[in-house]
Length: 476
Image 1 (tube, rainbow, N blue to C red):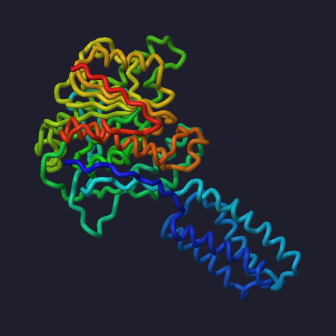
Image 2 (cartoon, rainbow, N blue to C red; image 1 turned 135 degrees about the vertical axis):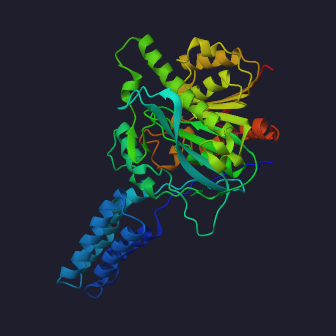
Image 3 (tube, rainbow, N blue to C red; image 1 turned 60 degrees about the horizontal axis):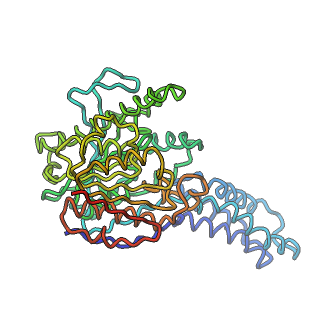
């Protein structure tokens, strides 16, 4: 049985050595103000420079601390070259009043843009992970710089595992050197903006020994300009409760990925000319979603192949007869397309699924598998919503229709942990970060628990969030 979810409280703080550097700078500012004399020449300088060097070597330098680094070096130099060791009262008062203010300005970015900390998974199982490159046996690449070649995709598998005590966890995005700058450019930010995420550890361990047993399989499909680990908090939570999750980097649809050691970036031309006729643009988006759907089918094919397929011994952990599909944006539309047309799908969850441009031939299918649709503020009461309502109206199944007030579409990803001022930067909605993480966990895990694990409907039927409206549409 799956373990029920418990609340998670978002923890953001600077790292230990960063904190020590801030405290050392505070001592350097206040000591002369409080005692009227500087410490022995060179002591403060040695502490500040030593801490700055050790912090960079042990924890890694980050751009939000740049001004603090400059302040530390400046005070170290001042400690060495200052001739006057005693301070008169006017200077002591000025230093006491204005020194902490200057230090606050220098240290503030470190607290506003900390190293993101991922929520601890709520289940009891440890998590292993591997990344594999799959090659379509027949599908020809239509995008990027190598059209006409066989399409390749990266997939990352998370699975219940036995983890050695001295194992090192994987970082949030193994491809952060390429994903970070590419993502920053999409948000019109400096290329180094997401640098801090390179120090974020997950709760997953590369190549850990796989647990035996057939766990339900959930395949995750990111949206346009997403990447395979952009919903890592929800992925890890699922795996800890007894699932195998496979997330796809949809090549040239993902903001960036690395295949065979080479970075591969998003192909903006795939969307077509933004000034083109609406019908042409619709056709381009439908083609992208169709490609993503073929990527999902390839993953299901390899899972069905068992140990003889690309997943090798990891296939022993999967139950290919119990399959959930889950996606965000275009990825949600691709997941729905597969579930409408492929009998291997047993349940589908979409977070702001962009279904508006799905072909009529796909939308005309009667949905027979349980569906969950979570929707943010910008995605309600529009043309896309009307198309999604049409899918539900024609269905012969049960649908959970979930509105999350105060959420932006990015709140369905792991964006809430990035920065406490992410809403002010337009990167997410005003809903509390702690709250939206728990909401995401409750619905995604609760839905698959009911329809893949068969543990009952309590997690869905007892939901009581003031920000959430739930409509259960049962057309069975």
